[in-house]
Image 1 (cartoon, rainbow over the protein chains, first blue to last red):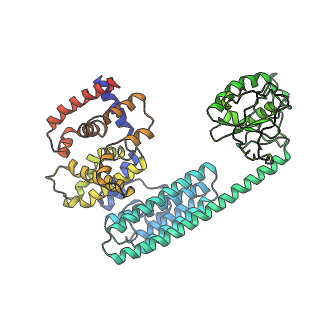
Image 2: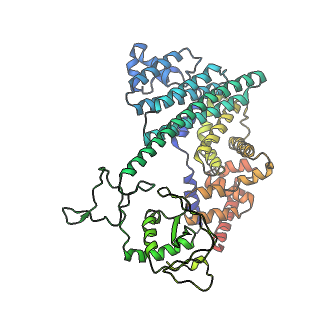
Image 3: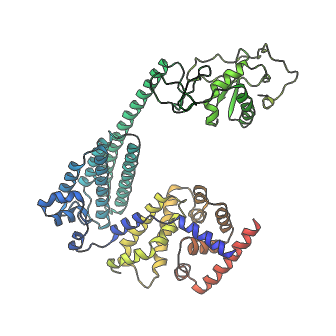
Amino acid sequence: MLWSIRQNLKRLSRLAEPRPAFQRALRKELVVPRPWFVAVLKPAFATVSIVTMLGAGTATYAYTSDDVVPDHPLYPIREQVERVEEAIAVTPAKKAAVKIKQLKKRVREMEIMAVKRKVIQQSHVQKFTTNFEQAVTTGEPLQNGERATFDDALSAVEQKQARVLERVKERIPDEQVRERLEAVIEEETRIVTERIEKLQEKRKLKFELQLKRKEAIEQRLPFKLEENDVRVLPTEDVEGTLGATGTRMPPKDPLGLPPKRIIKPITQDRFEALRIRLRGVIERGRLQILRRKDGGIELVATSSTPPGIKLILKDINARLANDPGLVAPIPVKPVLMKPLLDRPPEEPIAEPFPKPPILQQPSTVEPIENIRL
Amino acid sequence: MDKRDFTKFYDKHFKAIYKFVYFRVGGSRETAEDYTHDVFLKAFEAFERYDPKISGAAWIYTIARNHVINQAAKSRPQTDIADVEDALGDDRDWVATMELRHDQHRLLNAIRCLQKDEAELVRMKYLEGWKFEEIAEVMGRSSGALRVQAGRVLKKLKALLKQK
């Protein structure tokens, strides 16, 4: 038993293993600088080979070494190599990756200068902001997954920069210098924040445009698109065509859109099976029952309604409206029906509840949990 | 100490410090990396003043512990520092965020039921990977006594797990 405890502790310990990349990066940052000829022996980046006119060894060293910070004589060579790297990047994704790399270099330069107690100039902070703005512009054409990765990387770099500057600020003994740096930081943060807000505004507009387009498509379709873009075939129109193997194929979309998911129509047998499931869902508060003025009841989804039920809720309600086997819910606190996306808002339910014509009136008040579905 | 010797110092203590921080920041890798970076940066800056007569493990452990306490206290300005120190030994947040097996959960709960110094010994030795000699330097006790205590603590854990 002691052996198994030790094994479990070992497994827990393994969960906390650091990333090798982080360990290497931090080590590199803290290592005392080695002679320049050692740095030259490191493998060169492919882009640097183009800058042979500057001397491959010098360019490699200027680009890769942490010693080359803004006040180093070789810093202009590093900037030149970065410009070449940008020029070589052809696709938007590559350009964005190059920009993120450059931003990380700016932050690292500032860290090294802070560790080596060098003076961080206002221009260094401004250089980061300029690079940041350029990165934001470069990342605009990216789509979906690439955009998400880019945004995460950008955000991480920006946060790291803020932390570095805070550390630098803490170490400045001179009050006046600290205040000047704070002013610079505030100004740069304001610029960066404005840029991010503008970008978010652009994306918000794009999203709204997409929504409008979706609504326009829906108006032309004979049935409604669901919120998560799953298409529900109308129950009276599920015939489709027979495929080559004899299986029934779904009907073709009038706009040529591929069906993402097809929901089976709710036949009577399926509805019987659903009754039991729905009862459980309602009892756990994952569906709301609302009583309409005309006596019918309607099930409304909540935030915790299972997705499978949500998809077919409309068809379930259609069934419930016509189902003679339903026992009327006993009057409960009147609940205003929430306006659904694809229907006009109903009038609020008024007291007392009108008697449904086809249903029997119970003699005693029963709690809503006793509804038989 | 010469800063050129810092690399060896870093290689020797990096993993233990990282795990120490990791278990105290709720299992957040990003925060653990951040704090570890800060700890070693502080150690690097102070390395020239470090007296080799003091144990390296105890020295860097003190820096790491103080840093974590300061960061935690910053986020809770109204809390007493002693409460923050006590909360550092509580790995509830880490347990909540990590996907652990049932037996691992029980084990962590059992560790929380130990006395403070016993739990600290188990964490440092078996979770963070410190050697007995290093733990002895940190706790100010002999490594032999700690070995004996570790054996007793594991038996106590066994008894606790049987009870639960």
